[in-house]
Amino acid sequence: MINFRYHVVSILAVFLALAIGTVMGASFVGQGVIDGLRGRIDEVEKNKDAIRDENTALTNENDRLNAFVDESAPFTVANRLPGVRVSLVAERGVSADAVDAQARSLRAAGGIVPGVIWLEDRWQLGSAADAAALRDATGLTNRSRESLRAAAARLVGQRLAGEPPVSDDVLTKLAAAQFVTLTGAAGSATPAVTEFTGTSSRLLELGGPGHAVPPSVSTGVAAGALDAKFPVAIGQVFEPSDEAIDRGAWIGVVADTDTIRGRVSTINDVELVEGQIGATLVLDEIGRGKTGTYGIGEDRALPEFPAPVPVGG
Image 1 (cartoon, rainbow, N blue to C red):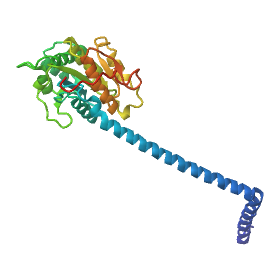
Image 2 (cartoon, one colour):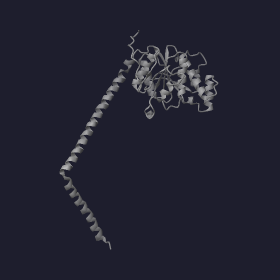
Image 3 (spheres, rainbow, N blue to C red):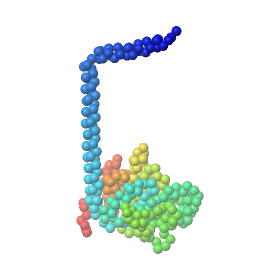
Image 4 (spheres, helix red, strand yellow):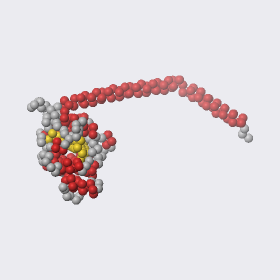
């Protein structure tokens, strides 16, 4: 029979075995091995501290370099677009902060930026009512939604490349139908549609992957402007959430569209201050009749830097 005394003896035996094992283990391991392990632990701690200090120094250096780029950006683009009116068009979904930063860069170059024309999600034409509203706003009769969308977007580009009509302005009608929204940029007031005029002007479109606005809208706007011999640049704003997407995915598709291939300049990193400088310099370059493909992963990050233009020259 197993009684209480048996349980007590069993428990004591377990503890005795553990004590003997500990003593014997310490004897076999030896003080030298223990000291060696402690030395390795100390070395790992020192390496960890050194790596942490190195990372801190690199972070500080990166912050200093970024601050230098930010502060020198206005001087880099100064007087590149004196008096040039820029029609800034952006897909809804593009970072408003990036759009405002781009507007500031253009203005620092002497450009006139009335505001932003936002292309709204309604361009998806997800319902018959949306398609009917687009036909009413543009006077188009296309039955296919894709052809209707492309033709309407082309009208936007043609309108931006010309003089605002006295009446029956397609841009006004599209705004009323909520296909586009006009806003100020970088703190400026909401512009009137008449401020978007083709006189001494260029077009900069901003878009990116993952937005609800179909890419064919941006290509249509660009094609319409090109119809009127209007210089066009297209920039991609790459959001942090797009990291699983190829950086050149959206802009590669847009730039390779038959109607605009080889006729526009592109830059693929406008979410960065480097890209905003690049887009500004691209607008300068296309005004001189040159086009190119720029940005991260391209042959050149920026256009060739022309000689500075003297103030008043």
